Length: 505
Image (tube, rainbow, N blue to C red; front, side, top):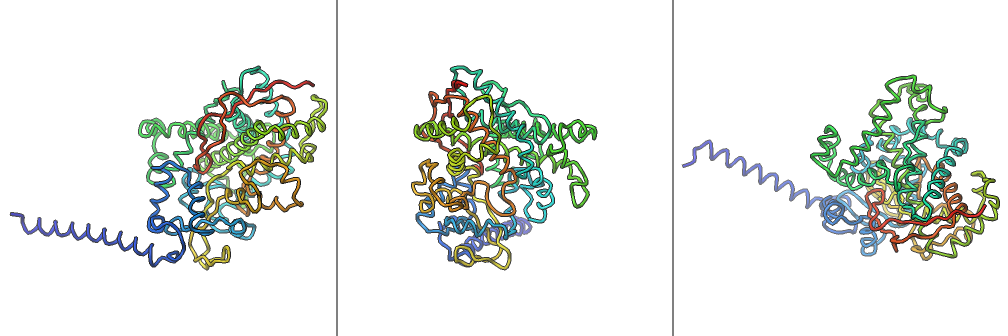
């Protein structure tokens, strides 16, 4: 027969369990019926628990952006996608959320899922980010990028030389373009590149590590415990505990090595090739209003943010643009004709400013930015406590609001036949009519730092590849570019390959 103490202990456990279950039930009912967003349309399961999004990302392994397309078709322009989260689909709402006047906080679960919490990208508040961004913006200004265009040209030329050396062997453009972008951003950061372009078949370990990191970040978004466990583990143990994270661990070790080499000996700064090297500036106390250089950990996290932001999106845009150029003969012919007119003698190379004046090349780049998913995920912001009106609807304070650029770029009112690659749409529109809806680099005070660098790489790379070579789509290339939303796109299926034959001088 149980003792009195055992009975009391058993009853206490039952009371605790019942209380916990009661709390969960109350919380679910509150989210469903009494939460400030209770009247907003959306799936019931999304209203009561964040596990709805976790299921889509981690169990179904599908793309949340594509799920959003179905939700908006069913529920309208405003959809409740989480207990405290709303997604919009109207392009005007995008400009109301992301603009020069709104200095709304970023939402933690997404922006702290990458291990870049102490970077210009990961700082949640505008004030936290401003000092770091002020330093970096000078290095990514239009003038600063014009001053280093020779560096970008050097890497583009190296890429073209590698294409020439392949002969009739197809080039893997999925990897090749990102290798070029990696070499550009690592040189700008550290004063030396890692020669990703020189990797056999362009399968540079750092590029492959970036690919394998994307689904890991999705897991971190839904579990801060998982992120903390992996990030705080010794590298060898992390690989054993979670083999899927080995690429991320290798990437982190590479970047940490670069930062340690720069910071362990101040003389290393004197050996950097020019004062515009990013870490030359980041390691100068007088570059900051506070007079304080960021910690080594913060500098490392900044390097990871710069790498992903500076390489993956540019490489993906080049790949998407090349895919459509190679599968649409009319586009290929128009681009080739314009480049031949502007660049008649192959060894007389036009400058970046000259390429920027070419209308059809510019239109191809804009359409490539529109069609490429870029940062595929919605970018969540926290509404101020006073609330805000978005899309003629009052949104209570502290609610998370967001919108994916995908819904601007694929809006059929702004971009008729939105799923078709039509560079001419940019030539036919009045000045700025469409430009304000090109949001590949986002808008507002937290927009992409490196947009000027990306434009320079796109102009130089598209021009040099399609002027210097006759390009044909290679065997086993995809019929369609398929991707999954892992913040950045995770591509599925075969890689885009091309056969590049050197053009006559």
